[in-house]
Image (cartoon, rainbow, N blue to C red; front, side):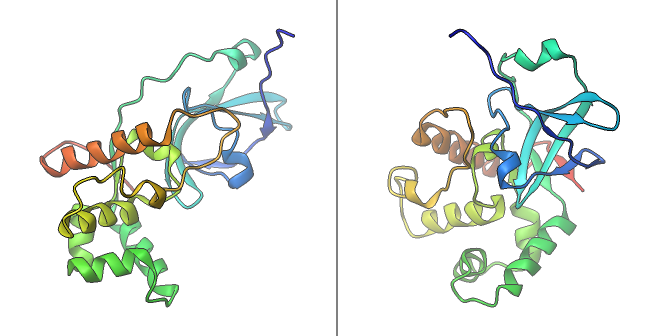
Length: 204
């Protein structure tokens, strides 16, 4: 019928560029524009989260500002190329959380064991956040360790042979093909591995 719909959620707490979205809220992120709109009842103000990136768990990094009604329908894709790296504290906290699971099947710890990596080596070499991470449920440290394990085991068809390993997040908008997303993700990781001197922002 020619109508455009924009969803407004209840406003969400925001501190130092970090925000937590639960599973329901995260479905309303538009991964192409990297935006999500909320409404602050107290201020009677539409708010916009923009430049959104997923960090793992329920954690995201984003900018937040007041928005006009006209901005609700701006669907221009976000030209997003930022690459981050999780801080030493964040990585150590994640490893500690994995150990709390107390399971030999925990994928991060299993990969660390098979790759014979110390916590310090994981802190130094893993935890990169690429643009495609917004689509991926798997924690960045977990999947990056897994990619290195596949390489160690001689798997050359990283995408085709392991597509089912990656779990995509759910959004209310349609996504491009899973294969295309994972190809970009893995290629970005392999590229940065070949040049560890790349400048990346550390997320504290």
